[in-house]
Image (cartoon, rainbow, N blue to C red; front, side):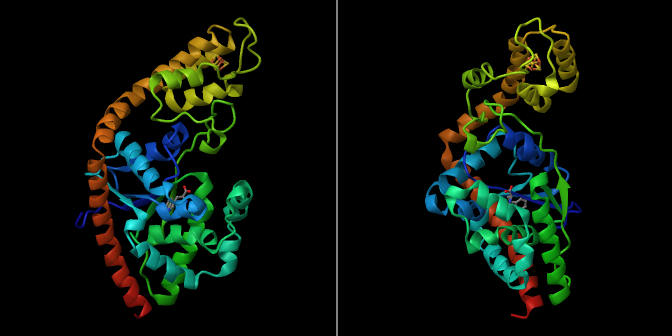
Length: 330
Ligand code: TRP
Ligand code: SF4
């Protein structure tokens, strides 16, 4: 922990349900990759979840546990990163409040996700003060660890831009307290769900990491493929095949290129092609299922890991808040 030369990474994930393949291929897989190279803080962002789920707040605790189990089982190592729960480090709330004082209203109003999400989550009534502050809270998450690097997908770039602007404004007003965070754009492959639309929990088309192998097979086997392939003898185009988006994410390149070539000359049937990606998934997820079974038998261990992460995060956050209060003057 002490003065490692490693740069600090912070990222957050909202606990809104069990993780699916899209979450894994987008965020989680990158988190694993960064563990050794950086000083990583990974946060399960309960308050961000609350901003859209406040009408159903009681599920957030359970989803926090779910997310922790998913992350630990997929290979996040609590010895090599700090995995913690945002709302257990109250300093995030204090810094959010201070940042909200200096953030001009037009800056948050123009964040594109605000209006987009309001439309998308129309049934959820997120026309709230808290939701408007969503990216300001996100800025606090990052700045409170003086993180230099923030791995996020494309959809979060506007939030990162705002975090940088808030950072600069704070430093200009009160003195250089925070380094300016950079986003690390992580590849977020577009994954089809079982109905061919983007895989998403809210569409009910997701394949979950915790789905057992039979369920994965049952979900993938009936998926629509390239509609040109009415018969086994019709050649297809993998670029127009929803299933092949799974191949791109989970089948290694050499094998995948062979399959694509076979598809284009009708050398392989869709079922056989699907079986390749199913086998890959089973291979990737077997260690996950094994670890998951252990954690599920021992929930106390999961909460203890989080408790330790919360403690380490809190210590880091408290150091920064000391500097912040000095800079502000009280
Ligand atoms: N807003 C992010 C998302 O929806 C989650 C998040 C919250 C986050 N705080 C963060 C991501 C800090 C990176 C850094 O995915
Ligand atoms: Fe899709 Fe594979 Fe069938 Fe081609 S062979 S259409 S890539 S499932």
